[in-house]
Length: 104
Image (cartoon, rainbow, N blue to C red; front, side):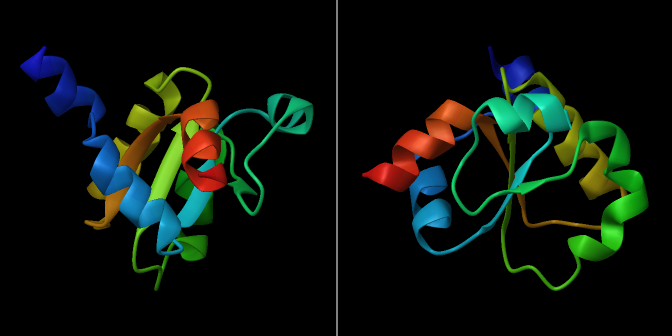
């Protein structure tokens, strides 16, 4: 399982909860249609294929949490952001996981 954690950026749920509660920049990387069907209150929708052209939206953010339907696209988004110099990115997994944390 360790290699998948390395590749996809698996998280400690406690750390994720802290980031969410402390106001991390919440980014849903699903398609606009998926986002419209249900989303995390206060999150921003930047689809995975738009991450690279929207890097300016991430600048100056203390912590960034990316998430999607299953955790796969958010893992890819995390990699793209890290390749562009962002070091404060967490793969939050599914949008439902992040939503549950936010509602606690």
